[in-house]
View (cartoon, rainbow, N blue to C red):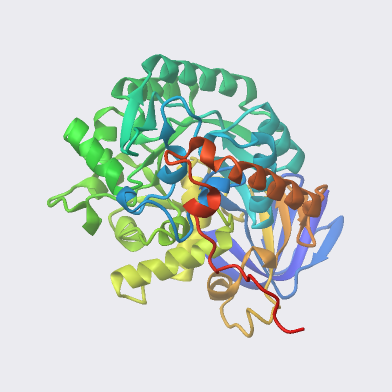
Length: 483
């Protein structure tokens, strides 16, 4: 069926980049775009009035975690000071033999909640790091989105001793078994759901993976023809642990073991030799990333909550590094992440002319597509996939606008996304995910999070409760007022 969207401002792709067509027409047939221009001369089976909207490519979220984020929600405004800006260590480390909160959730409920959230924000392609299982594949298929998945693996774990000191415990056999499990999973599911499901390997973190496991990962990726993503440069503890362990920065170490390349994505890369907190002179991390063609998955909001920022979106791109965007934890709103990427870069660089609206939109679309080596995603041009997002700009919060791209980045949120198409199929209509009872899903997610918060004393090294670990923002009201 041939569908025509008319009257909207269209983000078209031409001459190697995005171009804006005011009041344009976009036509797609089945899973492909067939026309972008002023007036379409042919027949259309369906016409959609897009007046007052921005019609843009589906967003490519190259770093996210598909669960309820019960652990991450505990450490807003809270957490151990000795983790130095790191949030996840507060709920991913536990005494030996105890499962930390970060590994306890109901994966099926968490994944469904997170994937629906991302689809509502216009993410047509997502890269959920780890946690993939049969239920996730079924959910991706039912929702109609595009995803790069497999189970994550590692051969090192964070362990807390009786004093709460953080150490590493190694099990190389478990790491190899995890890699084999991921390879088998990819062999079974790569290409599923009309090709919307693809495989990717996820050695979980640079500090919890041995050199042998990373070299084996590179061999497996080359043999399978899939990409790799790993967390690296997340925090100071990891950065200096790798320096101590390997006499290399995380980026240098990953180059040494052969992991870097155009098919590799580094999640975050906040702490590098470009960052002042690294305190490492004469660094060459950005040069290595650019030379190897490695992508950085930039997730600005989650690090802003921990008082940190990439230094910087502009500096990495100026060095020739491909930068894509991700949502990481919560909220999974890639529209808002564009705004955070722009504003934090301006603050870090003290230059309001950098990280423009066009720059961050490019990172959320073309940068992500480049990371996945897909020239049919992140763009609207004849032959590209019909992954399309329609954003309603006629909102009081957005107000009058002259430039719809600046309006999107500076004012819009995921709540302004009204339509989403993946492979030409409507998956969000009227701002709601097709076939999903969103109210019931939210009730499920709340119940799952409440269950997990009750388990905090079971894994916390001091047996603290959730309220002790993460005190309420306001004191409780103890008496009635008035009468």
